[in-house]
Image 1: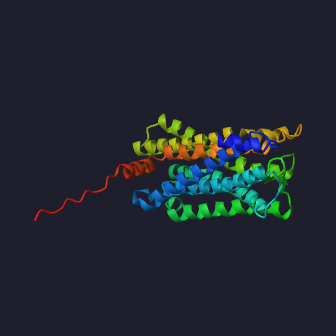
Image 2 (image 1 turned 90 degrees about the horizontal axis):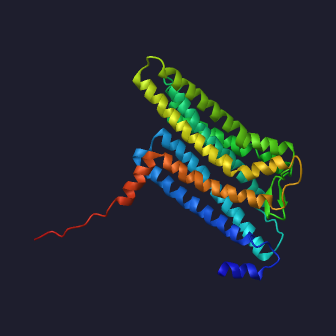
Image 3 (image 1 turned 135 degrees about the vertical axis):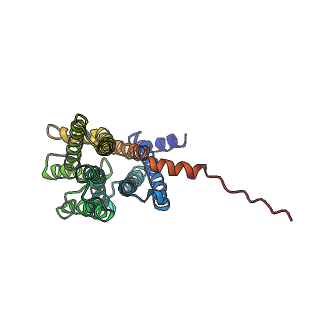
Length: 306
């Protein structure tokens, strides 16, 4: 009732702006809190100090930062919608830059997990490639690349404030920047992940038909299953990111709808919630650790009988 009363007091804005602004804020808060809890569990539980869990933690850091970026964007949009103003604050361009960088880092975090599974099967004797030091080096490298590639948008003043959508983003139109962003965020990491999956899939089917060590077959099947989980996460990203992808494709033929960014970012908010939950569901060790902490009962202190 309170929400509808606010909307009635602001008749000049679209009726769905305020509810969806608030919904996006709530979604972002949920991801922020859940990611922080899971990251603390990974840090505090020594059983979670494995290479696989470190790579999962990297994905959760990306999800946390993504949620923070979306939260900041939603707060800015809600404030402008409530005040009915067209105002670009000093952080508007930075929020757009941050969102592009973190989006690339998130997909790259899934790519690192897939590459690790690939190495453990095909290069099992290369212990350095499977070491924590090497994986941390790869993580740092992908973060560095993710934050370098969108810098060109700032220097070229390509990130613009969209009045109708109350957001700073690259305009959705046929341009080199849109192609460049799509390749860095989606096409390159997803293509490599798919190639890894198909190579593992063919390898498992080939060794099934030959006399092979049970350990090799078990390891290959396990890593294939892990990559299948990554494929599911990527599929969630692609499905929920379809409106954004559709508007890019549509821009080649006609002008996208007036509120295309608002529509696209609602789905992006939904995607990070689904990915956060799905990644947790696929990480057995993290589920076990959380259950034990929830079920742990405080010890009762029995007074000594004198």
